[in-house]
Amino acid sequence: MKASSSLISGFSGALALTILHQVFKKTVKDPPRMDKLGEQALQKIIKSTGHSAPAKEELFGVTMAGDLAGNAMYYSMVGALPVNPLITGASLGLAAGLGAVLMPRPLGLDESYSNKTTGTSLLTVAIYLTGGIVAGLVQAQLKKKDF
Image (cartoon, rainbow, N blue to C red; front, top):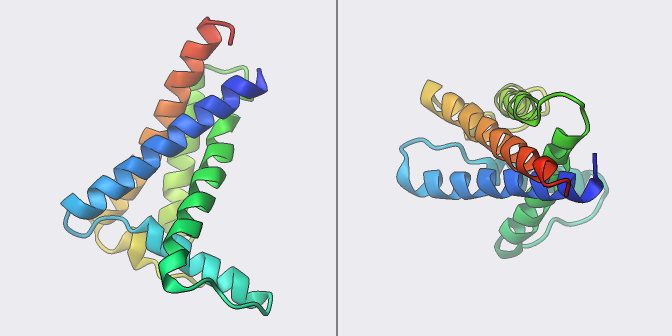
């Protein structure tokens, strides 16, 4: 595994995931709102340190940057295993999607952002799965080119 190909793959998956979230929030009834969930989580973390959260107008940008970076690092693990990158990416995506649906309540966050309806839950899992598949496909191509 080369770090550069893993990071490129991870960023590709994160970018695909973010684009899908943004498209679906404008085009689907009851879409996943992981941007809102991320904002809520960020506010909770910052407040727990005794600091003030960023202003509402800044919160979206800060959250998006954090989401892209975090998801890119997560999906970059697609190159860490000697297994087919597509299988690894799909597994990572499925795990992230299930976590996005199942973890908000135990973490004290508003679960409706990822789990409002059955359709919202399924779309949440599908979006994260797609991000993992994209990361896996990119990793497979870079691996062929020994990048």
